Structures are given as C-alpha cells and as structure tokens.
Length: 112
Picture 1 (tube, rainbow, N blue to C red):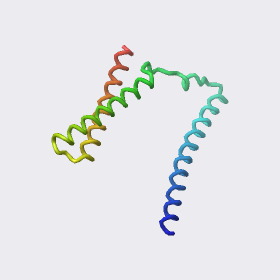
Picture 2 (cartoon, helix red, strand yellow):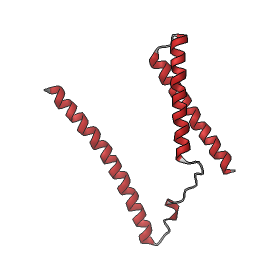
Picture 3 (cartoon, rainbow, N blue to C red):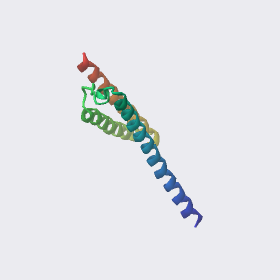
Picture 4 (cartoon, rainbow, N blue to C red):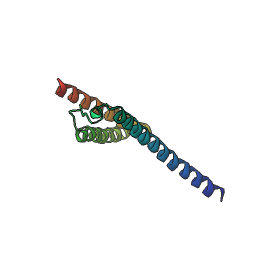
C-alpha cells in the first residue's frame, strides 16, 4: 500500500510541477504583453521571426543525427565491446549535437 501511495504522490507532484511551470510562463508573457499595450508601445517585436531556418529542418537534422548516433552506437557495441549504455548514449548525444551545429552553420550561411 505504501508503494501505491508513493507512486501517486510522485505522479501528482510531477504533473503539478509541469502545469505550474507552464502556467507561470504563459501568465508572465501575457501580463508583459498587456503592459506594453497599455503603455501604447508596439508588440511587433514579439511576432518578429528572424530565423530563416525552419523548425522542420532543424528537428529533421536532429532526428537524423540521433538515428546515425544509434547506428554508430550499435557498431561500437558490437565491434569494440563497449557497454551498450555508454555506446548508445554517447553516440546519440554526439551526433545529435553535431546535427544541431550543422543546422546553426546552415542558418548562419543563409543569414549572410
């Protein structure tokens, strides 16, 4: 019975934390925008999209990097006797990070 109660408390706390964080974030943003509108200032800066690289391309590169990381992690595990936890996690983070760096370089090249 104690395990069930503990699991319920942990679940409620986790959902409450996520909900509370999102609520505070959204309410703060709303109050800031309302304050700007009351002062008569422009809110155009909130809607200005300077990023030329679409989010779809960025996430696509990230997912491709994660997939390549899984493949190389499997290769490292089978051929070099690396423990699977270390092989997969390190390769996923390595190639995921490389893909985000590539997306940054593409975005910087397009902005020039």
